[in-house]
Image 1 (tube, helix red, strand yellow):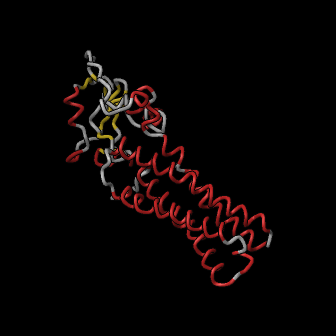
Image 2: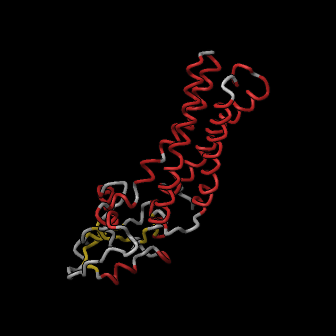
Image 3: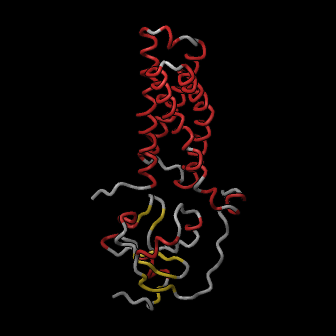
Length: 241
């Protein structure tokens, strides 16, 4: 059984970083916790951002989860009580991020749901309109396309901000794919909205143009699903051996 009374120095903690079969230890408010069994800490890395063998007390202020997750793992000791020098805020961080740590991680998760909703709703309301021949359903689909144009740039900007703030603009595979697919989503929103705006009788007239329009609107679902999938694998990495 681990000795909860063992005291670690920062140097000793740093050695338990998951490298070369070393255990994966982290520190939170003086407690040294063994997270080696966590799938989220494979090889000593968490979300491609946090490294094991460090004091993550400040990092938890930005985390999307509470500290209760640490209770699932054994405490193996404590940090030696030494007067730690207060860290100065990074010079590149705006003052409001230092004052409100949630702004460092949460703006994109708060805004990204809106384009997802409208990209899903537009095809579904269009299908309802085609099945029921009830025109208001089709008009709602058109309105969802317009809303998608308004909210997608916000999601893109907050995504770029989060990428810069939390991942130092590193060209992570998921980010590269999102950087390509998200503008495609916005362009598709714009094309479909303009097409329907300038051809208000598009659905009623039928024919090949209507078929192509419906097909492109339905394409929004797999496109936004793929974008969301890449984002989800950054927050909840797949467990690959």
